[in-house]
Image (cartoon, rainbow, N blue to C red; front, side, top):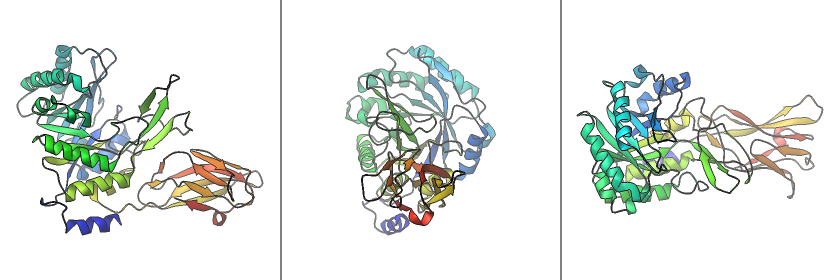
Length: 391
């Protein structure tokens, strides 16, 4: 259906502008340059226009700490490299002179390799004038030919100070994921579309849209304050424990098709956060990312498996994805009547209130292509034909 819809729209652009494909950059945000990262870079070079590498980020004292240790520069050099410097927007004070010196020192170590510098500073709108001044000074000290880009929040579009800010860089990357409450969805394609078009109306500066490939865990402190972690190992739980959120591939693909068929002015492409690797369980698989970028059909195929245990009558229940893209875990797995001695694990819970026992999904989750996940157990007469998977 996705492929058919895109094909129909290609003949009927939604505006007077001609449809055009987006170019794609990818963020390499991994702190450790593992073989899995190098492998993902080499497998994805044909998909991307350029790489955006997390080069350094500020610590609790506001000093810049270099990262990207052991980066495989040979694998990267087939595409332009942008070094990204993440400056915590919550810091109350920044020593701008020290910060600028640290940035220039890192750039110098990448001399001859790097094509651009990006500042990722999610500050509040009240601090935009100071940020603008910092960018002016940085621009004047960067080598000629190095492009300067910044990330931007949708909230900045409501500030009069954004006009002066957007004049400083060569390019802006608008973030449209995980910018609202940590308890909300990571990504809403309709809202993202509105933000992108608002950005196009606000500035004539070339810009990209940052799109998600990842999931995150939302936890609560004892005082009830939520915080999010998108890089720790997967964790499943109920509302009082960490909860998992995930960007749905079909929703992100929907936005890309809309932007390609009805392109806003000044939008040059997408920047993906982050490059998926085979060891990253909080990101889509490389196969799924490739399908979304290329506009291919998303074809997951999930089915349930029953594995007999050593104890007579005891079986484990698993889901396996035999398709070529990631699949959303089903909401319900119905067990046969009389199979109440059972329970769910890894995000599933038994519900016996209805006409048949059901393993119910407690939160959104995805199963990568070719992977298998245990979701429960049962002590009853159980086989695969007696299970009913409901998406």
